[in-house]
Length: 421
Image (cartoon, rainbow, N blue to C red):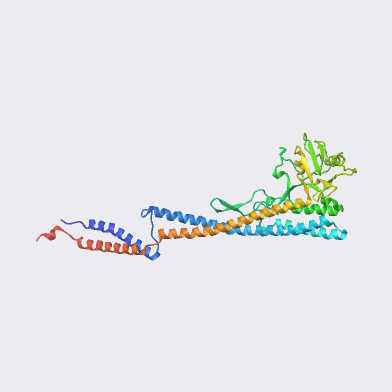
């Protein structure tokens, strides 16, 4: 009886493949320094390695976003800082004008030119670009977010990118918020719901609005009106009615210990309201002089607004609208310097917000870099070859392969006939 050669050949092929596979694997591990992992070898370590690699890839994406965001944030912070510093300079001159006034026409022209150049600079900075995108336009746009009047014409939503799980930072900004804007112009109730919606009024840079009012008053020559109170918004004409159909209320003006109450309804025009304030019996002092003087103020944008000036410019005036119908259309009443300060504070506040975002970006970048190192170390522990173990396994595979070859060589010609004498 003889064992068929085909049986030895099948056995040889089977185990030859296994041994060669082992030899190839451990040779490559030693050559590359990395473990050759397959799911069947160590499912847990293989899954962990893939997860750490995926997390590392995500973090690297976040870091690229941070690098992009940091450029934008740095430009935004620098721009707002320039506007704040410009505002500080302008405020000093506004206070000087309020305290001293204008000496002559030449002085007035110098001041006008100065204020004009400064307000133009603020508008120019508000329209700054990063690449082809206006930074304060709300979304990626090549159109200036502020027109020559300083009125916002950008979007009311900004653009953000993720810089960490659950954390997003700005790549563009809503200029309406970041530039300290104040409601301006004429309210147009486009959807007829009798509610002032954000897209139904104009928003003007507060510091520019105050400077424009000063320029208008200097041009008029009546510098006493620099101390007046002005409504934020107004009307297209002084003959426009001050409220909508069916609306009415009372405007209370408190000057010192005196309150002047003026009723209005849907037939009252802005001229009528001014006349009612000036002729109210309560609006007189002991000598019969008016306590406050109301007037129609046409600003540089062609909007007709309510102005009120006290006989004593150092005395505060407060305003109350009993129904709120009037203030929906006029906005708040305040001094020019208060308007300037309100806009200045808005820019300063959002500059701080941008500074906070810069600090967040820096902290996240540092933390992300640390996590990349940690994940790389973990992957290394899972994937780097254990040289002592790999050498031992290689020797073991070589010995097994040599034994296979020797066994096949010794037994391939075995036959019972060899044992017959």
